[in-house]
Length: 389
Image 1: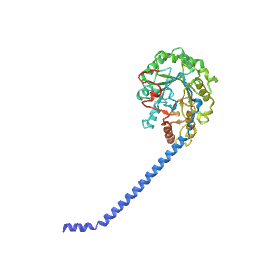
Image 2: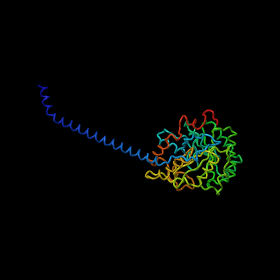
Image 3: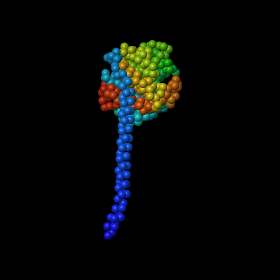
Image 4: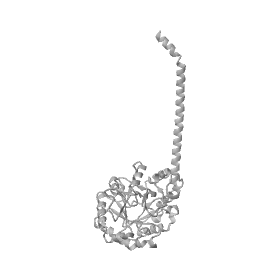
């Protein structure tokens, strides 16, 4: 009786239970449809975003002008014909930010760092420069295997720096750098007195040439063999309008020719007079060209839909057309630096704009660009552990 009564009482709840089950079933269906719609929306948005990035990349002209394919002479650590070395800098802070941007993988082929002929700093510990950025050659060289060092040595004509260099007053600094260079066992691209022809550096050509040759001779006498010496032009109107050739130290002292690319892509880099003068000179002396410093200095804003077309399209197209063998990009917020003459420069970090960041990564992930890898040194003609030419 108790069992029958129990069954009889429970039977009254069947309609309620059935209604609850039906409601649960309908809710499940609604959630499933909603989830599917959400998934479809996300998938469609991803596809649209991918199409946007592909469209941005497709605007780059990858044609190489045959005029700029020539046999290089008296040089070292040059990528093969179809490759370009990718480098990024310039401060430790922004390098670390870029690493986070890439999820700590797929690094470029080298890092940029700066030092001064007047002071051996930023090698065993961090060094904060007078401009407010942080440099740390030692960390970048030891922390990251299978990457080159892109090393910029500050030296100017003003304040008697060039004259003191020629007179040997900084020889002890140069010798310390030489010892460090030999110790890291990887290729170094050293820019001596970068932007030598820029009016801001006030180099008399004869002084620059003498200082440059003094440093190279001293480093060679110290047994340094893993350095490619880069002659880096400002690629803009020169100091006192001196012709470019007057600053040239000679074929035996220059491995690479470097240029700066900041404002040129905003206008017409292909017809930029001073840029073409440097590239034509490089062709005459048969040296490879690197873009030693580059950045869209007017800023990369999150809501700027045109910045890719305004700067990056011509920048990359120029690199293809002129067969540029190394690209060094500066990932920088110029507002934070205490440097005279750049008051109108902006925050130009790649990841300020999501699409620009994605397009940069997609373009530079192409096989053309040499990045960190176990075969990088081999592709540059550098034999690891032997530290030789």
